[in-house]
Image (cartoon, rainbow over all chains, first blue to last red):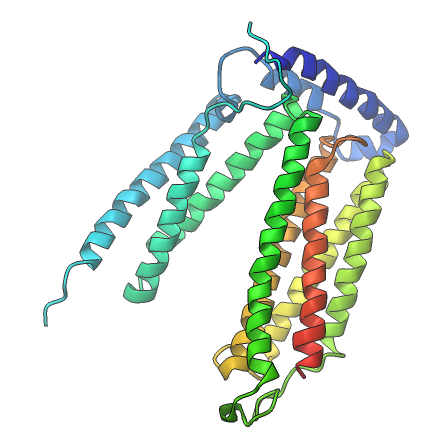
Length: 92
Length: 261
């Protein structure tokens, strides 16, 4: 999308600006609780590979999506069969 | 490459709305099969798919906002409106249960002995655990505000401390309520007193759990540097929700626990 280049610089500047500020506050805490990976993730998710956001990370996203779809479709079939059976009149 | 001439977010095609609706179908049908045929497989499947959809949908929103920069001030305004409207709808949800409580308690029927609390019901002492719970939630309202100020002042350590404390207080409340539920001398089946008490406080407890979970996600995002001093709407939404949960409890405490005893 066209907005990406403009906004990404904006938000990068925003995040870089304040992250640098945050990082310089308490370096001990930072190393204790991990380093800032947001800029790397921003690069990753702004790659122009045409992938939609829910599949942007590649394989793990695809697996999770397919698992969700399988459970949803399977569940729907189970549901329709069960409701069909439930709607049958019970004989004495 | 086409550039958009507006500050709104045209989202990528997403499967989550459809899957979410289907998950709701599975959950509701699952409830029917559980109630009438004693089978809980579909209900479990429905709850699992609902959880999967929620995780992926909200994960995508974080990606779109924090990593792709789509949450312009215009978009953020829309998100704020959305959260406010959602919380308002929840207020009306609870209003119904308060209405039910007052309907039964302001004019107690002869079947109840013409009194409230009804004859034979021994209500919980409002000055014991319920009062402690009130103090816990009020304190958590203060700690979440402390966390917010720390975020706007770029004080990472204090923000993490304050938010962690808020979550711990929420968990403490939940644990105490669970214990109270277990120890209570009356149950949900004890007439209209039991119904109004457990449905109102029960839904509140569910909202405490939801709010605590939301705050926990915010803590993880805080630790991962997602929030900036000027842009942290996810946290604000969680804080609004938490204050709402606190206010509902105050009303519950004053009406059902205190006046109703």
